[in-house]
Amino acid sequence: IEPGDWSSDVCSSDLYKNLIQTIIECKNIRKAIYVFDPDSILLAKYDGVLEAQKALNISHDTIKNYCKTGKVYNNRFIFSYHNLDLID
Image (cartoon, rainbow, N blue to C red; front, side, top):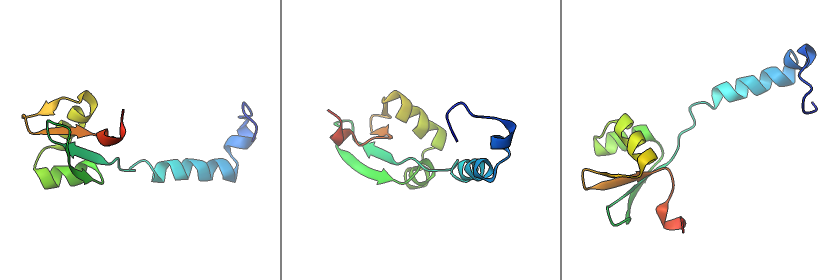
């Protein structure tokens, strides 16, 4: 398939159908959650938001919001999708 070649033949091809199925199956890929203390010392790493929610008893929406803002949660935790130790 060449870039820009999106004819109806391509969209109905088995390759296209397999690609769409793969995307659908991968939509629930989990992002790692890194938990740091306010001094940016790594406390824990979880395989996803739901795992962090269960371990910390903090709602997944709260964890996601704090991951996006980088703010300190209740003067206890910093949540991140990235290991802050590796970021300069």
